[in-house]
Length: 131
Image 1 (cartoon, rainbow, N blue to C red):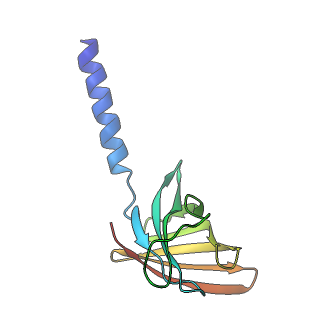
Image 2 (image 1 turned 180 degrees about the vertical axis):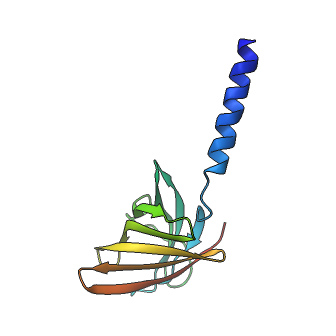
């Protein structure tokens, strides 16, 4: 009986985790920065919030390159608003070494990013979902 209850509890736990997966979770290709470099960002849960981590970096020629930024968080503390929009988070732009108070919007499969520092706002472009 204990095995059955344990199995049922584990099954419910896994079903709950799967149901909690946010539609924005995935891997995205960023737009090129001021130097023409771009990256792949993995958007996933960070506790109860959403984060994005740089998992690959590419040069202007499209070839993968080594970068000290791979493995670093690009997006953190983002919260889902429940309507395909996200807010309350931060986005770090490695090419400018600036962190912006940001928001995201899921547009189909892609993720539009924007952010502000005080009254200066930037459009981070639309990241293309690749997975």
